[in-house]
Length: 442
Ligand code: S3P
Image 1 (cartoon, helix red, strand yellow):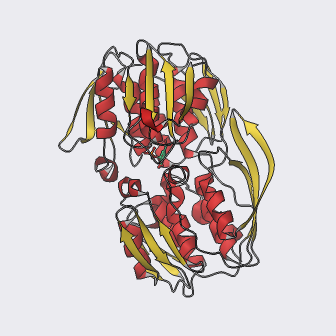
Image 2 (spheres, rainbow, N blue to C red):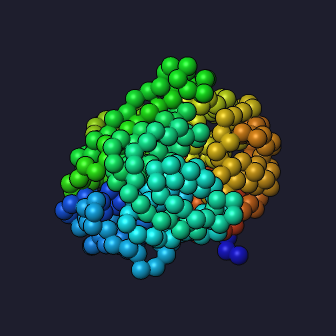
């Protein structure tokens, strides 16, 4: 088994290059494939997850030319997709499987979609049920798991209430809704990232969205839900898409710099979509000094440059609430590292979804934290972390990209350093992570 030792440092300085947004890269490739004409994408995330989605788009007939992070993609229009000659393999990407399944459900052919062992253990009921309601038929492994054999059909628009506030479910159904007759309307118990809505609108789709504040309408009470609808069978037109840097990847550097006094990092072109910026809100409440400069828009997505400086120790804050958690779901592990080095006890609640990510990020993180001297307890919907010094030691990423990067940051701020087992999985979302880290450390 390979491993990487991350020694403690005094500070981080410089301007690490943060790669393109993973969520937006998946969507740009898929929506470009469904459009008529040539879509140009710059700053595409050339990490394994998005490369797998791009390969799937090629299997569906898109013609892709790529030079580094720039690509052109000749779309097939809504009715021109080809039946894949082989099974579609999304590798580690749950987003890839769920979004592409929405597309496949509306095709006049049968196809099979799957992924690696982690993806094959992730729940697919959340997309199988609504796609069948729209008219597709889906065979799966026992437990409603991948591989999925999707028998595409002529779909009919309907209303679906998702029990989970998942952008992957919402996006899957918006993409299926593109092929359906009439309107498809999706209701969710809380707002989730809206990149699909923004991108579909930019390509000419008829998408509407709003909040559900009237709790009498829904079985959800404590939170404000969202609805989104799409009018089916409206053609899409190719666009130029410039992808902002991924705030979820920036988060590792934000936390490290905030924890190390004397640090000063500049992070440019960071995506600031309000459905993704919960990490900034929480870090600021913990006392981190983050300055937001040069706020602007790139292709309908808000972007800014961030400056973070290390200063006084951070203070523990409860992280909970159905309206906050979806805005930082992927950043909870790195916020847990911030909590482990902060003053006081942090409680993370309302985050049961963390258990069904690439790994069970509650169980795995608590177990690995204990190996490096962090006091943490698992809860069904989160964890409790007692802040203080992080001793260090050896801990395993379990092949989960975000956990590998979390353990690395824990090593930087620890007393003895952390040896990260299985460090290569950063390829999934941030292939240059180890190099960027070396460039900014003291
Ligand atoms: C994603 C949505 C989130 C997130 C995942 C990416 C997306 O999952 O955790 O990493 O691109 O739509 P859920 O929508 O299932 O919560």
